[in-house]
Structure formats: structure tokens, C-alpha cells
Amino acid sequence: AAYAPLPAGHVDAIVGELLPLCVAGVHSKNAMMRAFARKGLHHLTSVRPARAAEALVGFSLGALTTETAVHQAETMLHVLARLVPDLARPRSPAGERWAFPDDRVLQLLDLSLGALGAATGAKGKAATQLVHALLLDVTLGGDDWAAGEAAAGAGAAVLGAAEIGALGATLDEEEEARARAEEEA
Image (cartoon, rainbow, N blue to C red; front, top):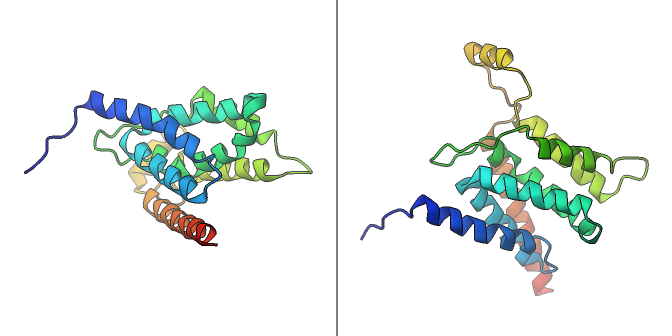
């Protein structure tokens, strides 16, 4: 028997409830939980990219600006960097897009790039990874440039969403294998 698709309001409610749960999971001490949470965020992003982007950027800003959540900033920057291809070039049936650049993303970049310096640690590397992902997959040009690229048949991205998505899947599989090895040890 075929099932009817869920109404959009139900999908929004499910995504809204699962996003905070998955974000909490990426901060878990359990490696397998972190891997599953990242995979969950990937799927939620493919279903509702704009809503996922809004929530993830909000959580990331909170981690960078709140004294009590500063230890979560590196993780959130890594998560956002891994999801940029899905956010920038969504494959959802509704064709929903992430409005970039939005002021919160620019604020996030300002805050995270402040971590770069002579003693750049993990947070600085995560910030660099996010900038790299944005530069690879987000068109940074005006309407005239985009129209010229489209007319010439040239692609705007250095790497396409399929290639980056395949890389993300490979990285997720590697992380899941490491998590299994940790649990077995």
C-alpha cells in the first residue's frame, strides 16, 4: 500500500523538533552518537535547507558569543562547513534555498575569523574550513556576472554539489568507522 506524503506543516514540525536534538548530539562524548547526529543534520538539511540553515547559524552564533557555550563553537563551525553544499545548492523537491549572504552568516564569519592568529587552534581551523566551503559552493558575484556565466554555459562553482556531497558522505563513513573502532576498544 502506498502512503500519502506528510503535509508540509507536519514536516516542518518534525524538522523543528529534530534539529535541536541533532545539534545536541554532535556535542556528545559518544563518537557513534556524534556520527548519527551529523548524518541526521545532513538529512534534515536536505528536507528543509532554509530552516536548517537558520537554526544551525543561530546555534553557531550562540556558541561563539556565549561564555557557557564557547566549547561548542568549533563543532558547530565544522558542522556548518560540512553542510554548506546542501544549504547552497538544495535538492529538496520544493527547491527551497538558503538566502545567502544573510547578516547572521556574515556576523558568524566575523566572529569565527577573529579566532585566526599566531596561535590558531582548532576553532581557527574550523573557521577556515567554513570559509573554504562557502567559497567553493556559494556564488560570490553580482547579477551581471551570474547572467554572463549562465549565457556562457560555465559553472559558477569550482566543485559541484555532487562532488562535495560525495566527499561529505566519504568523511561521514570514515567518522562512523572510527566511532565503531572506539566503541569496540
